[in-house]
Length: 122
Image (tube, rainbow, N blue to C red):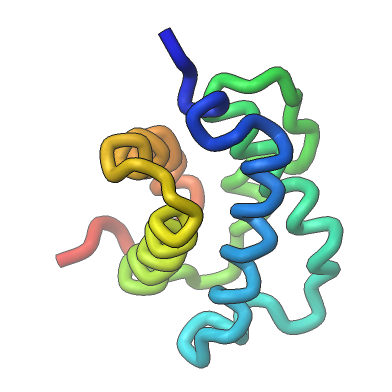
């Protein structure tokens, strides 16, 4: 059985997706404030390692746990959904199959409560 990691193009595919994803997110006027003063190279590296790990790849994410990393940021359900839409658009543009995009969303949604401050979307 092929892992999500393999379907995404392994490490190189995930790193390319993360680069494109962050270009979209930091260009979004609704989301850009979350990234002011952030070391984007470091963030991209951590995000790549996290995605590699949660999709079945060999990387071992050693950054702060997601609850600690996002504490105090005031991330709303709407902004979380908006970030998810940017990720889905990135993966779609990279030719990733819709079923795989759904699998990635499911894998990441397990961390939603660590990221979102205001609870589930209405």
